[in-house]
Image (cartoon, rainbow, N blue to C red):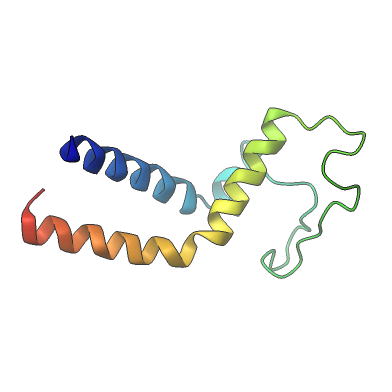
Length: 98
């Protein structure tokens, strides 16, 4: 049971790592997954604008827009915690040989 949860955690961590390392300029822009609210050719981490219409007030947000927002949120919010999680998993694998 615990081994299954451990593998599930590892798979989730690998997927989150994969999302976190996607480059917006090199990869996401090529496939059209750049949010339209972010200006081009500037440091996007400091120039993010937010929708003032509220939580879905009169607008139909598509699946692609939600995925773009999810990728942006993972890259922004989980960057520092992922470092700690990755270090913990590396130490666990080295010591216990999972």
